View 1 (cartoon, helix red, strand yellow):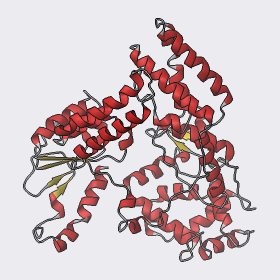
View 2: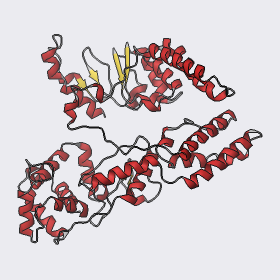
View 3: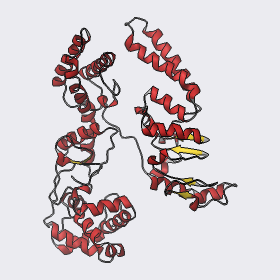
View 4: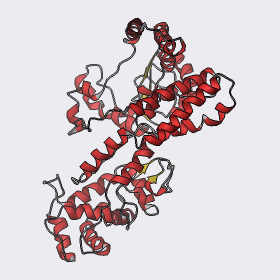
Length: 457
């Protein structure tokens, strides 16, 4: 992220010189990402979160991934409180606002000097909590109206300090992202049993908190709405503590627990998981590849297992074995200077091109199946990759290799893939037939996963 921020800032230098009358003296040398030191006028320092404990006295302090500071009493949160008093202005950025609780929002508002909004936000938060702690009544319309009024006041109080946008709010910038459209899934609605599971878990966790049990996180966790793994793990963690409670909370919670266990035996895979999996299968059957980002690890784990059971295996139909393909690719790369300068990385990349799944994809682009090494080399150098009529398959591979060399992280993957070939997307070894790979900590079926922060499979 430091490298990306530095590159992004430097990319605006020439534009500012043209568009801004007061920026003639601006220079890329003013943007630094080394160790944090005392800033001079007109300089910009880009550092990691670990520098938050240093003295970062400046005019404007920008904190990216600011949701990391939402926790009360964490080292990073405390450090930012200190820094917010040193900086003249503070701007905090986050792309994951949905996980921020209202009380955490108030703490983050403090960082940007918006303590005046605390009362309105807290008033709305208390009104929400009141719904679950007061006896039920028939005044639902009055309750709803009160919530709307309090929410409106909270929004009015924070609107000058909180800016919330998505890419849809920037139509002029959309073109830079290339083709982008909303992925329409099948119209899925939660079943009555699924809704009951969500409501019972919400009640169960709220009673547990009232009883003094150590239950962290939201009672209506976003993960419960898309997968069952985290739901089941949360439920399992409540079984033993419930036994130690006193009446009547013990009986009330035990009742919810029995009903939930009964429903979980009836309710199969999560409806959201099935909808995504079916859309993925339909897309990959058209020859496409997909990268799916999940907000939570539990969601990624469950989706990986679900997809692995539905996406059909794939193997090359060519009569030529991997060694013939490897020889053909060696001929393609023989004159490339970047390949000559990085022979080990070249061989790793060619080894990946010769893996079963990548060969199967490449084979699908040929007009006919090559039956000799000469025919294969001709097909690679004369025929085009799917959706790329302007570039041959060979040139596309050469371009990809050179692009990978430009990135430190990609070079690292190429180096490590010599020992751990499963690090390369689309292949888990030369004899792989699986088409699904999850990048997260595995819970089961470890061969389907690659750990996000480890080089080992």
